[in-house]
Length: 190
Image 1 (cartoon, one colour):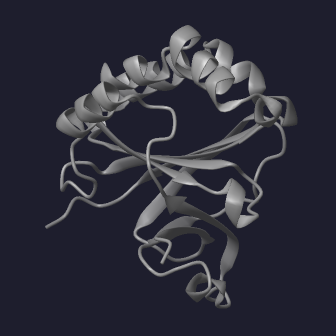
Image 2 (tube, helix red, strand yellow):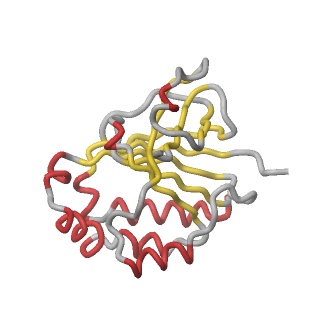
């Protein structure tokens, strides 16, 4: 069973959409709220969307495809859990890379991802303030290749902005042909 997560933008959900920006390519329709559906498999998630849903994006939780063993250990050690009560800010950033990226061999993508862009090293610099989880969408036939989900406390918003700016300034981002930046807030857990 594949663990597929569904992000649904529309009129319902615990996350309030504060803005939707489109740094590259086509955007997504506006939405007031976002729900995040956990669990199930790709067949179970084919059900009709709830009324008021504007768009749905799905991604599978998978292994860290470009990380070395040392990087995996460091990420798992530093990574805080999602759904922390103080993490009332979030960002969903769907990304689609170009055909040129996917034509590269795995080792060539790794070289761009890590050796020249230092993607993992940059991300580690913002842990534990910013929790993150990557969802793979390409093999599900979705319009994006990856759905990146971040959660952080309001006092770490500047750190999150710095993280996103640092990643967008890397050679890896020359291969991004579509990116949507959805910012969210939720009420603090009581």
